[in-house]
Every structure is written in C-alpha cells, then in structure tokens.
Image (cartoon, rainbow, N blue to C red; front, side, top):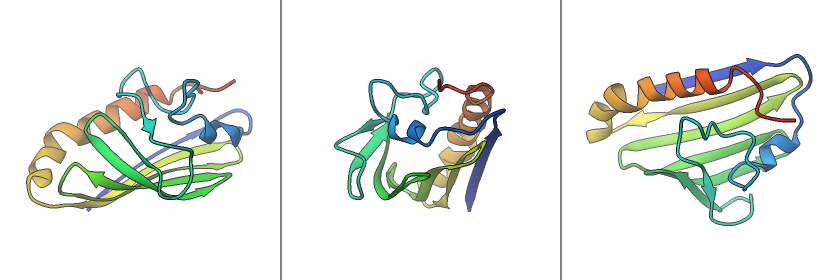
Length: 128
C-alpha cells in the first residue's frame, strides 16, 4: 500500500477557487517547478481525463473543496490522488496499491520525488 499525505496550513483561509486553477494556464495549485504541468482534457467534471508526464488519471469527484482523481497509468498503480481544502489547510493525498513493475519503480523513483517535490513546493502558498 502506498499512502503519501502532504498537508500545509496557511495563515489565512485557502480560497476554494484554487482548485479550479488546476491544469489551466493560471495553475496556482500544482508544483510546476518540480513536476510536469497537469493537463485536463476538458472541463473539471467527473469523467474528464488528465495527467502529468507519464502519469494519467480520470477525475472522479468534484466539489468546491475537493478534487479526486483515479490513476489510469502508469501500469501497476491502482488508486487515487486528491486535493482538499478545509479552512486554512490544503491537503494532497496519494493512495493506492502497486502491482508488477510499479512495485520496483515506486521506491526508487516516485516515492523520493513525490516527497521532495511536494514538501518543497508547498512551503509557500502559490495563490493570491
């Protein structure tokens, strides 16, 4: 089981509009300095496909305070990642199971990068 949770508290409430910027030209949520940009293949609605680099997912749940995506690639990663906002707290959760090649590649490539990138990128808010 893989479970990475990255939470940041800020000195003021996180604007719910922040989630709506994901994958847009004005993306203020995704850590683009450390990761390939996220791209949505349509409006943020259930069923919209999206991804960044080789990672692909489909948007499953949309609400004003939460976006949840289910992984569709890379092969062997089964689970989800989501963003939630609660008052002054922004949380990103990546959870799932690994199968086949992903069991080997996760500890070597994805886990160190996920932890380093999200922790460094979220030290200051990327919103106005």
